[in-house]
Image (cartoon, rainbow over all chains, first blue to last red; front, top):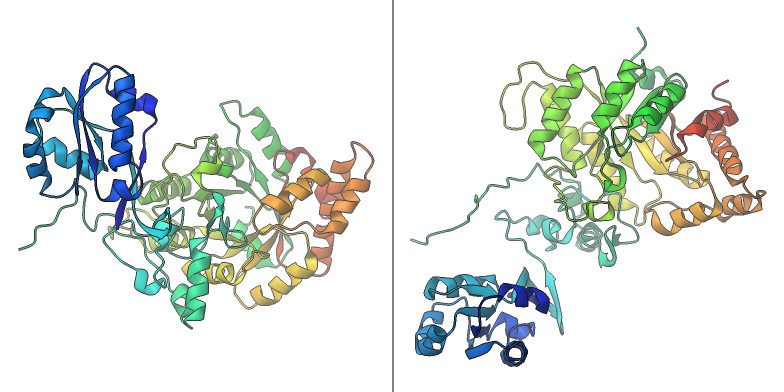
Length: 214
Length: 296
């Protein structure tokens, strides 16, 4: 599981940093290193670009896993350089921005946009396969989630926009329901596709979602 | 009193419906003109619901105009723009204003339209919407609460007889029937042999099928539809006919082709009727019906 990110356009980063002359940069050694959006290489490159902009980069770090509890320790160890900065530019996913905001009393500015929680399907190819809806139906859809893999999140089969196994919004994308159909057919379980699914409960876990394990 | 659309469907007559596209804006003159032009020539008129995800005057507004002018409207309702509260409210309102027919559609994706950044809702899908209607007819809303005054609709849906692969579409077709669909309008068909094969299958179900006829206005359009519209294949012989038409006459050839298809479908009792779509060329629908020999 990876939090998939992409770097914001530099122009937007620049705008967000307006008024902040001294910047500390924090990357993440886990997901954004994998996606090449906030690993060491990208953090060093960002430092260079900010310096070219005339910013003073007070320091940088690639936190092993920015969303993890150890982040607090990493922050304490680098407190000097962080205190010298007016803000922290975070090259981790939004979970990292959230964590850093809790530990540091300075503005945490996201350098990345968090796109989805996905898996690596092939080298450099990340795909969203679960929308974390709280009501898993993969047992009836041959392990392919229509809520996630169908553009419209349809539960009762394909729309009329599918064509030759592709989606109406993008000919490069597979129609989830064609994939489900083929896999269920192979498993001899097509009867599952004939089953009517009632409207979903969108509040099975009302937002903001949280859980406390006893 | 004129028979209801449901009665017309049950009567066994060859049913003809067509379609009105509401305007983008408040100038409804052209829409009203199209309604006046067609309302007495067809059994019912669909009003599209932000067709192709392009924001327009609402379907219900067009339906009320049809009612006011003495026609029989079919309210197209997509699941793209409204959640289950808004969809049910729309049905309540439509019913109180005498709209008795609803065509339930999933709706195109938002990103194919002209408000690409909008949120696509899809809280319900077409099968669930059909079932919602039947549920409301039993006197309750989807929350399980009693309705003070209920609804009753002749509910329809769509099917794509030439989709590839076809089986998932047919499963959905059957699901829609189980959910309460009484009639189907098909995606545009151009190959009557293929359509006959679909009808052999569809005949086993207790629903009325209206073949979708989309007017071809040029060879370019025919090729575009084949390449871009899912489940639509215009056979080469029809494209050749359009190409061979004298300059500026392609639309007349298209009218002739549509008329010929309708005449054949009727003569051979292939299905229960036709749904004629002239997307933007509503003006010539009477000519198509005349060419088909179904109106004077």
